[in-house]
Amino acid sequence: MVSVTRTLKRWVAALARRMGIDANPLRRGCDRAEGWVRLGLVVVFLVASPLAAIGLGHLTNDASIRAARAQAASEHWIPAVLLDRVSRNPNDPLAGTTQLAWTQAKWTAPDGRQRRGEVPAEVGSPAGRQVHIWVDEAGDLVYGPIGQGQIASRVIAVVALTPAVLAVILLGVAWLTGRLLDRRRMVRWAAEWSAVEPLWTKRTH
Image (cartoon, rainbow, N blue to C red; front, side):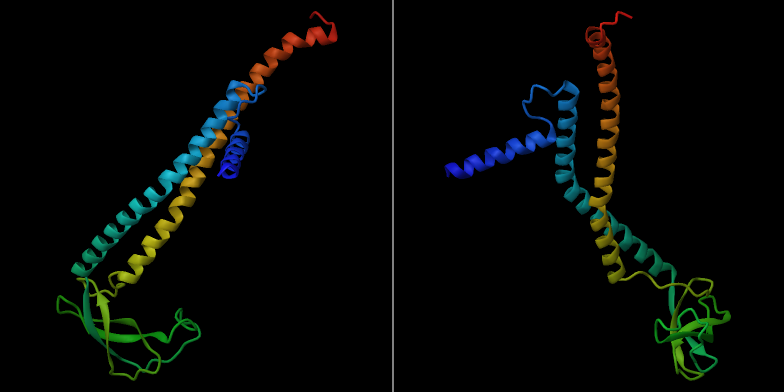
């Protein structure tokens, strides 16, 4: 038990020395102030990082669910009839990534008008096959509402990036604090040198 206590005291003393908040008489007030600022920023990161990640994760999840519901309310899942056999085109943006390719199709818009355009369909599908697509109120092709997988990916990304963003912000605060204190140190060093320099150099000017 005694050895554990001694080890803990050594660890705390070493940490205080590294942070600049020990009892070293050579440290100036601004040095200790910078050390306490660093320690405070570390504490802020350790406390705020998980809280911010959880909070922003919940906000992202709620916002994504609302967006998905809004999309589902304004979009329609309707059938479209392929006009040509679906073949792979090396210039197709989907080529080489999926088993889909863009092809001509026709469908009836929610307002009753007949529409025609390119839709993604499985390579090899014959003309006349029916596929389902997402369209808006005007019958234009749109992306479908985001699903649970996309919502989860957004939440995970936010939760993972929040600590990194917070760390960058706090490092910026630490850097700015150091620069401001450096200016103060330079002013005090200049004043002290102007008082000591004549005694060393025997100059009176």
